[in-house]
Length: 215
Image 1: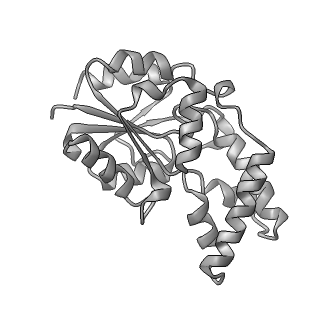
Image 2: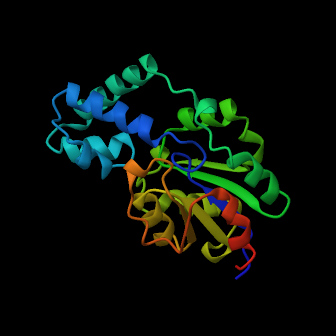
């Protein structure tokens, strides 16, 4: 196949945000009575708050879950993340290397406002021609929709693109969309993730160009 596009996930790939979000989400949910264990919460890595709330509070109405989500938004605002401090140091060099050859897209389960904040704080925004937020699509990861939308905007077939992911849900989404998936191992070994469904597993983004050269 001829690869023309590379589509990146955000959390755990471009920035080491998974531990921060993990602790933040767990603290908030347990504060409102979710009684969620750390192990249970780890299974939700790669998902977004809409999906998490639907799973944890299936008997709540849409409005009730929306109220909880609004509370979480306020909680996050009171505990802001500084993306430039947790940026993957290999991200910008990789993007600069592949930008002349490939279209570069972003497909995240997160909300657009957070995605844009990350891109601005890390100065990575100029590299991304296409940005898709799964929170704006009917079916977020692990459904393939976020990747299918990115492919549509990039005018690419699934066989012409590679996804770079970390979470099991993200890998599932990329594979379901028909992409070749490269999985970056977690920065923190405490956040072990099943990445066996990925086509490639790497320790560093520095390994990506060599893999692309074989595709």
